[in-house]
Length: 235
Image (cartoon, rainbow, N blue to C red; front, side):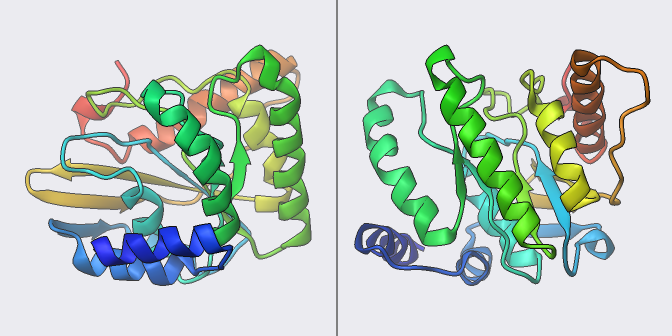
């Protein structure tokens, strides 16, 4: 797989375009672990749809297997929302600030400041939200990928969704219509991609903006948690 990653890096550096689905298929075929797919009947054949996945972390698991693995299984090209850079480890901050925009252009991803946003990134985050909404409006068959936690912890377990994420997902619902939750985790030696049933996200009437945000965050997290082993669910 090293050669594939070198090709991706060269495409990004040279301003080339790549298919995430094709690169995902190559990656999935070469993963050094056994892969199990659950809920194949729930994999969307087309959009509009939002896919939400846990931001999984574990020794032996590469972060980019999340997007590449799911992209290989969904039979259409799908963009992702991507952190504009890594805050941690600190020594990677400058490198990712430079390289991630190149990578996003290569695959058609939308960059967004890491969560939770720093105060000085409020304007940049608002601009990213507008860009995502425009993408959804202009592409009625869009299948969009999102890891709503925006980060992870060493145990690999779910963490609470940052404030504002629920409000953002509710803004997407008129365009994406339904959400397919995905759980990714190791079970023994097997890497599992588990797709859940699609659902609609429509907040109850009468809630304040903060209550709508909190309600949506809880629902989205619960739907992902249902697909994960007990030890990976948020305590």
